[in-house]
Image (cartoon, rainbow, N blue to C red; front, side):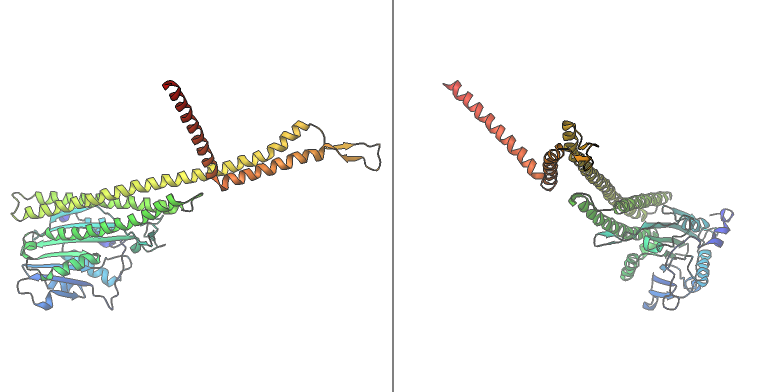
Length: 437
């Protein structure tokens, strides 16, 4: 990459906007480096470095190295930021890579040649929502950015998102270095298990094989997150279907499941686009080396596995939409019951209105000639309540019975249909006997 295109401001602003967990400088080393090579002493196969200079000075021709570092973030100490920037300068990490990370890009792959021409470089990013499920319920709510565009401080962004970067540096002297920033533990474990393997020369000949290992573990991580989301969705579905009457499940749970489905789909599509970019970069070499065919098949297979998981997430999204529809139907049903209750209350007053209309007589007699009792209750007043009170009470009891035992009336209707059907069968039988005679 031409130095003319480099943006020096990105290095100066780095790591603004990058979140992560700063290391404890007293107990945690800055770099853990795994090494493969000819006659590598056992003490150098897994080395801890306290500064970037130690990693740089330990480089040996025809040696494979995988270095794990914490993310350089806004909360990192000035000393750690300085060490990261020294690595960035030494390994010629382009300024675009820093800009992508500060902007929280989840789909980005690039490859280039260093300005000095002594090494081939490539990089990619991974950004995914962390799906934390306990007792089949989602635990983490929040967003990556706040309203002002800064890091979300309400709940640690690290507990909401998984962010890591991978930078490959293949020098012409045969030294291959993979820098892993903020790599998940399963990737560290995978490379740690590979220390006993003698086939490390394959990665020297074809450095992109290291990306194959990285995406293999990222797929396992992503598939596990989709499984967590499926468990949370199963609880939402059961809550929506099994509830009687007005549902107690909040729209917040439904919204969170649906939102995480969208995040997962975005991540899967971004990863597939990244793998497409890797395949395109691998095919650019003409003619390709003999070892490249294996790498192409491995990357293409990894793309298909992400496609498979993406289809599962699509299904989860549709199930979430179905749960929302069921929940809305339950809310509508509850509203319908409320409207029925209002209608019943209206019916309660119908007897009063009807009887008053029928009687059409005043309830009080006024005779001012009688000084002792000028205002008297009409004789029909007591007759009025003698009719209205039983009607109102009976109607109220009928409504209570209707709501408490809704299946009773359904069984009565079903029984009435059976009686009518039986009578119809008897009638047809009589007609049949008459025809035979």
